[in-house]
Image (cartoon, rainbow over all chains, first blue to last red):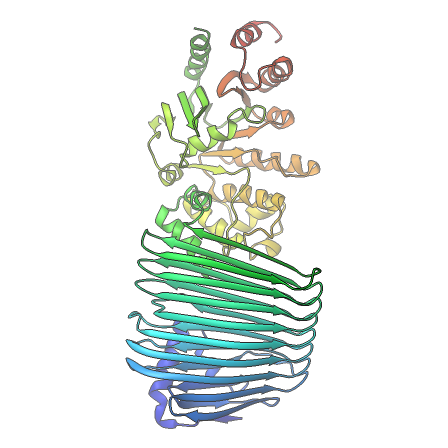
Length: 321
Length: 270
C-alpha cells in the first residue's frame, strides 16, 4: 500500500531519485507499486510503499527516523525492497535506527541507496539490529554516494543474528567520488548451519579516512562466514581494516579476505585479522594483500594494447564492481 | 669462437628469408643470473616457429623479453620487429605494433568477465573474429563462459583456453604462446594445436614455446634453446632429433658443451 507522506517534498524526492540512477540504481522502482520502497530525506519520509507480507513502521526522530521492517514467515519477495536515505543540503545529520525481522523461511533482498551529494558537513548514523529467522535468506546491498567534497561522516553499525540454516548476505559499497570519514562496525552472530557473507568495497581519495571492523561470531555447529573487503586508496587516503572471526561451534568455518590497493605513495592501508578458535573442530583462515596492483595483471592487459593507466583503471573497476 | 661460428650460421639463416622477428645477441639477467646468453633468432613472417627446450633453459624469459615485461630488460642485444628496433619499447607499444603474449600461467582478474577480457583483446588488434567464435574455437561454449568472472574459480585449463581465445580475438601479427600445451588434458592437445594452426592461417606468426616434442613437430620450423642460447634452428624433425639426442646425453644441465654441439650439429643425420 503506497503512502506518499509529504507531497511538498517532491523536489527532494526527484533529487534523490536522480542520484540513485547515477549510482546504478533504478529510480523507476520507487514509483512501482509492485516494489516495496521507502524514501527518507533527513528525518522526513518522502515516500513509503509496503506490500502484503512486509510491514514497514516509521517513527520520526528529531534528527532522523526509526524504521522497523518485518517480513512474514515464508514470504518470498520477487523484487528487492528499495530503501533510499539522504541529506541534500551541505550540512545536516541523519540518524537511522532500524530493526529488521525476517521471518522463518522468508527470502528477501534490500537495495539501499544513501546519498549526500552536496555534503560539506553531514553526519549519517546508521544503527541496525537484524534478525534472520530459521532457514530465511536476507540480502542487503547498500550503495553510498557522498559527493565530491569529502564532508561526510558515515557511521554504520549493525548487530545481525542469523538463526539455524539462515543466510545473511550483504555488500556495502562507496566507490564514486569521495568517501569522507567512514567508520563501519558490524557484528554477525551465526546459529547452527547459518551462513553470512559480508563484502565491503571502498574507493578512498583525497584525505578520506576509512575504518572497517567486521566480526563473525560462529556460534552454531557448521556455521559458515566470509568477510571480504576490497579497498582502493589514492592521494592521502587512509584505511584500517579489522576482520574478526570467532569459531565457537564445532565444524564452523570462517574466512577473512582483505585486498587493499594503494595508488601513489601517500596513501596508507592496514589490515588486522583476529581469529579466535574456541572449539578444536572449528577452522578459521585469513588472507590479506596490501600494495600496488599485481604487475602480471597489468602487463596482461597491456599486452592486449591498453596503456598502463587504462590497465590500472580496468583492474580497479573490476575489483570494486 | 665456437659461439661466434654458431651465431654466424644463424645470422646467415636469418638473411635467407623475410623475418618478422629478429633477435640479435640477446643477454638477459634475472636476479643476478644471466638467463639468456647471446640468443640469436629469426622468425619468418607467417610461420609457426617452435622454441623447444627443457625446463629452466630460458624459454619463458625469452618470451617475456620479446613482450617487454618489467624485469626483463636486455643487458645486451636488440629485438627487431618488422625491421623496427623495439628493444626499448613498452609492452603497450609492442602490443600496438601487433605483438602479444599468452602466459603459461595466466593472471586472474577479480570482477572482469571473460567477455570483457576478450573485448579488450579484440579492441586492441585487427578484430576480425567475434568473441563468441573465439571461445567456441577453444572449446568453451560462449553461453557458459562469456559472463563468468576471470578469477580463480576457472580451472587452469579453462584459463589457458581463455588466453588462447584472447589471442584469437586480438588476431595479432605475432603471438608468443608460452607453453599453451601445459595444463591441458592430453585428449585436447590436438584441438589446441588446431587452434594455433587456425590462428596462423588467419595471418598470425606464432612463436610457440614448448618442451613437448609432439607440439614442436606441428610447427613449420623450430629452434632448440639450452643454457640461454639457441643451439640449433631448422626443420622441426631435425631440431627435435637434435634435442632428444643431445639433451639425453648432456650431463651439463642447462650448460651445453658447445664443442659437442658443434660436432653434432655438423654431423650428418644428427
